[in-house]
Image (tube, rainbow, N blue to C red; front, top):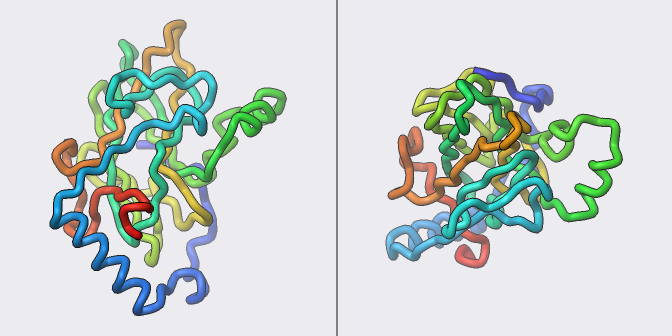
Amino acid sequence: MGQCCCSPCKRLLPSSMIEFSGTAAAEAIMNEESLLENNIPQVHSINPEMSAPSIRVANDLGNEVKGYGLALTDVSVEQESCYWEWRVRTGGNPTVTVMVGVSNRRNSKFYEILASSSVPPEQHGTKFMCTASDLKDGDVIGIVVQQSELPMIQLYVNGEIEDGLQVTRFRGTVYPSIYLPQKGSNNDVSATFLYREEQYVHGPPGPQFHPLIAERSLM
């Protein structure tokens, strides 16, 4: 159901890029488990300042996005392994195609340059994203991230793993992201960012994949 737009060679990374020091890894895991055990609420949303001007936040919770173009959330991916979902609404279209994954930080200057570029907009800022096609209304895309193993990102659709929908690796600080198509005159395609366990429709494939935790909470 679609293909990954990022196709780096699937080879082992240098150990310096994927290994964590024992102390740092242990501390990160302990902090993460402590936050989860204490049920510290995490509140995340779509970040309009990092998203395309044609994107709009569609609900009071700030986690539903409409319009078209690239949308980024306000929480960076800092954990060793984590999971989140996007629930897609087709806006009356039989099926839609979206891109999901992660993207580096963006700003208004990025979109100004994009507007004057001859390169299709779906090829800007989507290097670490995959294309999920033929999605029906209400379909749910699950994103699994594991930073010390390959592939670093694996997609699931309605709880089922999608072979080929994966990103081998990513670099830098990244944020959960989605690219909505410009489809129809009303652009009513929308997606909801589901990042807490009680919001999940399907949930992660294993207990090691925790909900997203903001960087400041891990400190």
